[in-house]
Structures are given as structure tokens and as C-alpha cells.
Picture: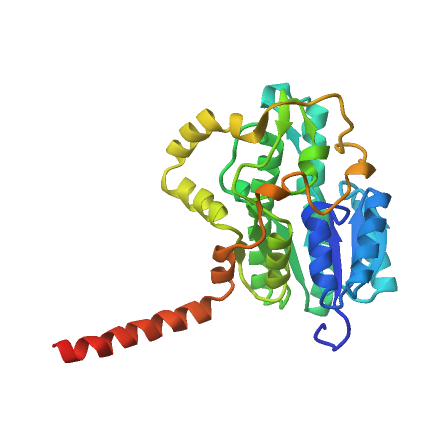
Length: 333
């Protein structure tokens, strides 16, 4: 429910697969009306059926988020057919697994336009409507790679760093204007999504996420929580926390460590990549799904996320334990 008592109206970009599709599921289970934004119509149709089976309502919006006019048209359709947008989630992304020197300028540009400018354009369309009503929230789906870059993903890492800086800038403007609109960023760990099957890669072996890996439902629930709590940022998974804070403590050590391990850990050794379709410029319908190929390795929950979203409970338990310890210590004295 939104504040007016009706179904929450949500837009999710990158909704045809992976984390975006799982985010649509998370909102659908709470009865939301959802604008599903992505390029691939087959994936969007599958996501629509799932959303409706979970109790939500879906509007399919085939859109290239790298095109501002298409994003704006999608936002207009949502407001016309579903109502005022309460939550906008920017999840769409594209990447190229390769050494920077092996990436063509047009490939780097395209990955940046989808991942970074797609987020900028989505935020523009959302805030254009939300600020006028003085309500709403924008959730940026980020990554630990927004703080700690790794080899072989220079375009993606650069885009995620850019999104973090852009989001901080916009947040301060909203605060200056005393707006009730909020913007937040959820920093993800490695996730079991189809992106490793459909991304463009120039690596000798099949790309893979760096363990530990989480199922997409874990960050999806984090995004839903972030959309209803005014948290500046939300980190998901102990590995994301380690990467973010470890880099702050010793970035030079992180450079050395990733230079030694970052190539091997991002490839399935002995599994060469054959000529395959990728989604950098066109969707790959056959790969549209919520989960990727790493189900057997993926965690379905995160103790860190639970603790991070239950801070008052944790604080209360710690305070109670401290008080009990004091009481027990008094007879001994």
C-alpha cells in the first residue's frame, strides 16, 4: 500500500532477468502495481506472468534505458495506466568482461550508457514527477564494486562509482530543498544472475561471480526494505561489507590482492567460451530468467543483511545483555 491507501506503484528497470526480475517479485508479493522496464519483450512477458501469479499487477514496457526519450515515455505510460509512481528502482546494467585494452571504444560507451546513464535517465524521469508531489523514493541498485573496483570489468566498475557520486550529489540537493523525496543506494555482493551467460566477454574461460554468491532474492528483499526506510545506503552480504571497508583500510593491499587473484576468480577454469550471443546491443531472449547457472553455490539468505535491517532489535538485545551482565556482576563484588 502507498500512503494514499492504494496499491504501491513501482518502476523496475532491468526487470527482464536477474536481480531486477527478483525485485519485481518482491514488490508483487506485497500487491504492488509494477512497470517492468527492459529491452527484451520475451523476458518482460515472463516477468509479467510471474508478477501476476504472485498477486501484483504488471505493465510491460520495452525500453532501452540508454535512450532518455524512451525512459521518459515509459514513465509517462506508468503514470497514465497505473498511477503516480511511488518507487523507482534503477537496476538495468551491461558489462564487458575483458582487459581494458581489449575493449573497443563503442563497447565501453555502450556499457556506460546502459549502466550509468540509464540510472541517470531513470532518476530524472522519477524525480521530475516525485518532487512535484513531494513524495517518492528512488533506489539505485549498486555494488560493492562502487567502492572497490576489480580487474576485467573497468566499464562496469566505472559506472557504479559514477552512480554513487551522482546519487550523493542528488541526495544533497533534495535535502537542501527540504524535499520529502528520498534517494538511496543498495550495494550488492556477487549474485547468481543470468548476466554471466549473456554478458559480452573476451576472456578465454566462462565468466563467473566471485564467491561468496547470493541468490537474487537476497538483494531483492534488501531493495524492498530500502524503498520503505530512509537509509542512506544499505550493504548486502558480509562479502560486500568486507570489500567496502577493507578497501578503505588498505586500498594498496586490495590492489595487490586483486592483481594476483582477480583474473582467475572471475573465470570457470577449463570452460572456454564459444561464440555466443550477448546482450550488449540486443537482448538474448533464451537467457531471460531470475537465476543464473550457480544455484548450487548460491546462498539464499544473509545474516549480515538481517542484522543490518534490524538494528533497533540488535541494539536492544545488546543493551539487555549488558544490563544482565551488570546485575550478575554486583553480587560478586
